[in-house]
Image (cartoon, rainbow, N blue to C red; front, side, top):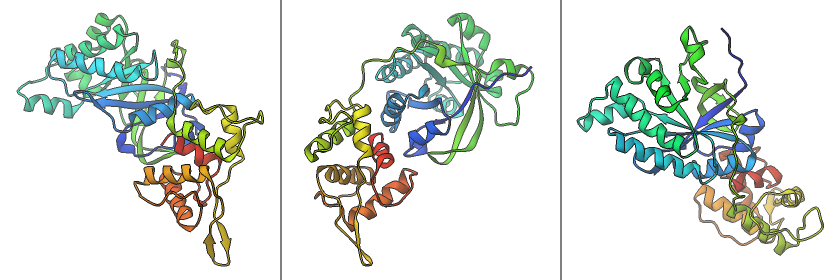
Amino acid sequence: MNKVILYDGPDISKHNGIVNMKKVRDAGAKVIGLRAGYGKGNVDQRYIVNAEACYNLGIDPVLYWFSYAYTEKMAQNEGKEAVKQASKFWKRCPIAFDFEYDSVNYARKNGVAISKYFGTDLAIAFLKEVQDAGYIPVLYTNKDYINHYFNIGDIASELGVIYVWYARYTSQLKGTEVGLADIWQYSSSGSWPGIEGNVDLNHFYYDFRSEKNENKENKINLNILNFQKACNADGIVGENGENLIEDGLDGKNTQYARKQICLQARKKGIKWTVGSTGQVVKWWQTRCNEILEHNNEVDGKYGNVTRSETIQLQKKLNLTYDGMAGYNSIQAVFYS
């Protein structure tokens, strides 16, 4: 039995650092796994930035919550927290219960042994919260966990439906594994454009995008809003020849304005001196300081220091590092 791979994509968390989500999307990722958080209300440190980038770039998510639950009540609360984080961006999307070896060890340290019966109950408690809130229940698991910690049949019977995110790092699935996996995480040491270092990679067999995903109202991105204000102060207009609407959305007029901008230093002999000036330069200098965690002067003058900072930032965001802040670099810092 062969299953059709509908699309591929990575899954990421804070451990993957700053991700260039546009590069991830442009490399073919229509869906991406995002860790929303872990344990008792701990939101992944990169979740909001990563989720906002996915939301604005049209990448659908499969969210997951790494569980440290050792009571059903704890699992329920984790499910509620996962829904809370999902609802900041999506009214409906898949949310996975991620219970692994660290979860079992944490339970043991707290005097609780996780049997197959109890592991199944924890999964049901979490996923029932997800399902009751209108989200799609997904169980992240592997062969060992199916044998020792989860009864898939009981979970499916309780929920009416269950989707399986199956981790197995091999060249192909065999036997019942083939029919089981709706998502196959086939590597933990893969590579994907826009992501530095090793990353988990997945084959998606089920089209989660076919599930109705009614987004909430458009989100205001403060980075975009401040860019729009800077453009208006500098007299940089949109495609309609008018000032940009300061709405925090990367619409066609904001994109048009971005195409007109190439912030750069001026080369004089063998030295770099001030080239571009203005409020957009100030905005850019501010974003460089924020992303690089530096404290350089924000003076609206694009000289040698700002050029060097730009190169550092471009390297960190997996961009072409030419020392000039143009369309792609500006877009990247919208979501970083």
